[in-house]
Structure formats: structure tokens, C-alpha cells
Image (cartoon, rainbow over all chains, first blue to last red; front, side, top):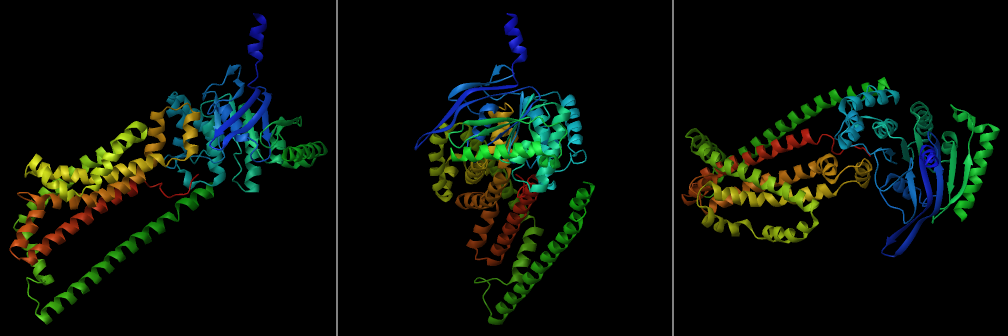
Length: 264
Length: 274
């Protein structure tokens, strides 16, 4: 009894155990994921890297509850994921802002859809917009903002209903290298201030090393976990820290693991 | 960041002003070329002594238009025809949009209803107009129904296309927020379909004018179509052209109004966002 209670308290923010996913296509079954198991602790920042087509996005759909695993199970804070959940916020590759809504209206979309308290959510949204440097842009339409600002707005939208878990699918893939680094630094700040648990899918090793507490390396299809790396470097980190001996070695190790993953 | 605001708002004003100026310039250009064309026709007709029952002179058409409007005859007929156009357009378009929504939401309905709608569309409206006159009489209601049938198809087809042309990311976005299908429709699909629907309405309003005249040709007591027939029987080509001009202007104005509504409602359409 007490043991069960402790287990519930200590259950990880996200538990992925033995997950396999097979798509049934017209040309036969396609195995996207095989035997994926990892835990994400509360307030931890975990990145998933892997060659393209390794099933990173499939994994994301499973965590978001948009798809069901063929084998194994996923649980968020000890509760099995059977469908989309309000406890999760999602940031996609593209900002996916609705062009007919202002930035503020876009950010408040979860309030409309989830029927959240208007005053409380609006206050949160304003605070988050200010935190993301978009305080003066609430009344603008998405097409009036730069790509980086649109991405920040999409992160604010994912946070506005105060989810425990934030899932990000290569959110900066479409941005130029300089904006990418700025966004990563911004994300680190937002993450440190908000204390969310983040699962970050990327194909950039330096981004993963810069941001993460742990990095999960996946192999080519069917996606399997090759290795998991710890990154205990202190926060806040700067991009120049990446050239420090410890992080440079970590980067090299991940790269070596990815080379094996692409070959596998 | 502050400079971003200034760059996005300040150049907008000169652009708007120059657009207005070029718009006014284009209207002036059009008027001048129209006047020159009319003068040429007028001169040609006088030069070659063309009989008025073959081709009326622009001055005769203008006179006929003036007297028709001054006597109140044209405006009374136009009021009737306009009622038919707008009434039928409203009914047909609303039915088309609602049916389109229903067909996208309920696939079974799509499979069962769509063939009938296509069949209905394939039958020329001139062919079913006499039937409508038999069923609904010589009054205004038979024309409204003919116009409604004409407008139904473009708004239906465009509504369906617009509701289906939704980016899969936007669907995933709403689903990840635990959104229902009704919420997906309300927050994503319908706004997304708006430019498509407006394009359908713009096609519909032009067809509505045609539909109303066709209906009046087949059988009516009053209306612009009746005026055309009367002028035709009397070989009064000046009056006939005058009515056609009136009808053309009406069509252009209706289409222009819709276009303005579209610009207001779909201000975001065509702007690059992902």
C-alpha cells in the first residue's frame, strides 16, 4: 500500500516501456519503432536525436496520444497515455499559427479548445508573451512576425495551459543557423524559468548537447535506442561552452554513436 | 524588436495611397477608352447610316436608358429581378455551404447525395425552368428557386474543397489539445474554407443574374428579363441595349461588393505563414 503510494509519487514525468510501432501500409507492414524504453524525470530536458526516418516523429505522435503503440506502453506521471492529454503541450516543426488569428488569439487557442478560465489564462498568456519577448506583438498577425518570433509564439501557445510535459518536434529546423542558436538560448531560459519537463526531438547534435540533461540516440528504421548520454554541465549554458573539453568530448561521442546508428 | 513594428506599419501607408491612386487612374483610363469606343461606334453608325433596328447608336441607347430610368419602369423591373437574384443567391448559397459542411462531416451523406447534386448541376437550368414555373407559378418564387438551384453548386463545391484543404499540422494541433471534431470545424476548417467559399459566392452571384433572367424569359409578369423580351418583340434595339447595360452594371456592382467583403474577411489569405 505504502509502496504503491511511493511509486505513484515517484513515477517519472514520462515513462516509455518496450514501445514498438508498426504501420500497416498498402505495400505491407512497416516497422517504425522497436523496443523503445526510457524514462524522463520531472523537470528534466531530454533530447532525442537520430538519422532522418528513425521514427522520431512517430515517437512524438505516441507521446502526444495521436497514435497508439503496437507494443509496449507509455505513461505520463504514472497515467497511461491512451489519447491526447491536457497535461502535454506540443510544439511542431512549423509554428502552425492560424493566419486569421492575432498572435494573442493564437496563443489563447488552447483556452478556447479546452474551455479554460478566460481571465487566468489571458494573464498567463500575457506573462508568457512578455517572457518570450513578444509582449508588444499580441495584436499582430502571424505574417507580420519573423520566423523566429512565430516559433516563440508557438512555444508560448504550447505553455499557455500550463502542461507538465512539453513535446517539441524539431521546432527550429526551418530557421537559419544564427536564429537557431538564439532560439535555443531562449528556450533554455524559458525552460529554466518554467520548470517544465521537455522532450526535444532534433537532428542537431550541438542543439541537443547545449539544451539537454540527457540525450537519447536512435538508430535508423526500425527506430531503436542506440545509447543514452548524460550531460551534467551546469546551467545556464552558453553556446561557447560547447567547445569546453567535456562537452566537446560528449559531442564527439554522440556523433560516433549516430554514425553507428545510421549504419545500423 | 521595436524596429520591426516600424518597418511593418510605416511603408504600409504609402503603398495604400499609391494603390488608391493607381485604382483611380485605372478607372479614369477605363472611362476614357470607353468614351473613345462609344464615339467611334457613334461615328461609324452615322457615317454608314446603319438602321437603328440593326444596331442602335450609343446616343440612342443612352436616351433609352435615361427615359427608362426616369419613367421608373426600369427601376421597378430591376427591383423585382434584384429581389430574385439576392433571395435566390442567399438561399442557394446558404444551402450549399450547409450541405457542404454536412457532406464533409458525414461521409455517408457525401456518397449518397453527391451524385444527385452533380446530376442536378448537369441538367441545364433553362431545361428545368419551365418545370419550376409550373410548380411555383409566374411570380417571384419560381425565379428565386431557379436562382437558388443555380447558386447551390458553386458554393457547395467550394465549401467542400475548402474544408478538406486543411494542413495536417493544423489538425494535429487541435487534436493534441483534446479538441473535438466540432472544434476542429469551428477553429480551423471553417476559417480555412472562407477564401474558397467566397470564391464560390463570387461565381454564384454572376450565375444568379443569369438564372434570374433565364427564369423571367421562360415565364414572368415583370422583371428585367421581361423588359428585354418586350423590347425584342418591338424591335426596339435601343431599349434592349439599355436594359442590357443596366443588367451588366448590376452584375458588376454585385460582384464588386462581394469582392470587397472577401478582401475584408480573408485579409490573411495569401500571406505567407506556416
